[in-house]
Length: 412
Ligand SMILES: *[C@@H]1O[C@H](CO)[C@@H](O)[C@H](O)[C@H]1NC(C)=O
Ligand SMILES: *[C@@H]1O[C@H](CO)[C@@H](O)[C@H](O)[C@H]1NC(C)=O
Ligand SMILES: *[C@@H]1O[C@H](CO)[C@@H](O)[C@H](O)[C@H]1NC(C)=O
Ligand SMILES: *[C@@H]1O[C@H](CO)[C@@H](O)[C@H](O)[C@H]1NC(C)=O
Ligand SMILES: *[C@@H]1O[C@H](CO)[C@@H](O)[C@H](O)[C@H]1NC(C)=O
Image (tube, rainbow, N blue to C red):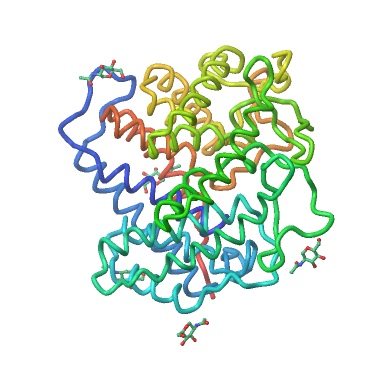
């Protein structure tokens, strides 16, 4: 139950709810009609309250530490001692229309954050949360803050340079962890997951554009292409790879845990940078996934070369997939899958980390729901694309679960 993730989920939900057009309810969908204006008003209020509950509690009890522990109301530095939740929440403040607090956050970050620290961090997590947070805050600050002088960009470039050291490996696929001051440490493991090796194209690509220096985009692409080079004859990727040798150490192929965002970034980078190489890699892998991994409406995990079933499991991280399909126009496939995913949410009130499709029950040892935003993200893209209110009704179930069942109230 981390404030950072909580804020991420509610922001997506607010964006979704904010975009409801009350006139567009569709009689033919399988759910009963909500009273449009009323549902919209209630959900928006709920989500705003949830955001400020998370944000204000973090600021009161934990800032400038990375995260808030919601039961003890203590802060903790879990990621890198760089005010993770704060940096990660800057653009969320804009979604909440809070320019004052955003401006304060931008200034504080410029004055106080430095990455010259003897700290070991995850290259993947630091990229998506901190580099991503700095870049989006920078781009919005340029648009919205007349007094802004660009101070976040040098900070982002400095972090990018530190992360780049991880890419100095025999294959070009990055190490999973580095020390921010000393780079890759002696004895660091050469095994990394596919998502950890191939989820840099967006942040690194944008950093290259903004700094006019191609080195970040080049490193990200070299890593993605190396992973793709080691694909199986079926065009499937494994789950973990040795970056020194290119050998797969876990050969399960799926779209969830350990791989997920590799596909997301290939497609989004192809669209954002109009990049044909990323698009071709995405399309080839997409075809293979539909052929070997999709068991309509679910997705499973198979052996990357033999395509035999290894795990007949819906894992929570797969939930971004229907949203991604929306971006390539595969609306019907996406709809059948999100209905299935949402039915699991309805049944348990959350999605367990693993839901076994053979037993029809939670996978032993995989009961938890660490506030993952993927299902909300899919609903957001799908609603934006179709304007079908069925997605708002699904989102309502997420809002209610989170609001009623995960909130911690402080007595301190
Ligand atoms: C209503 O929803 C159904 C099923 O989701 C869809 O097939 C149909 O095209 C939608 N109609 C309109 C007018 O959006
Ligand atoms: C912005 O956020 C701060 C901190 O929660 C709050 O005090 C302030 O009222 C908010 N401003 C607006 C316009 O919502
Ligand atoms: C942040 O920077 C400002 C300006 O340099 C300074 O006054 C303040 O003490 C710093 N805060 C923290 C928590 O380091
Ligand atoms: C970073 O990792 C190295 C090697 O595992 C370890 O010796 C060192 O204490 C760690 N540093 C910090 C600040 O945790
Ligand atoms: C959760 O909250 C909503 C609105 O606050 C309420 O209508 C609903 O009945 C609550 N309970 C559950 C289990 O969702």
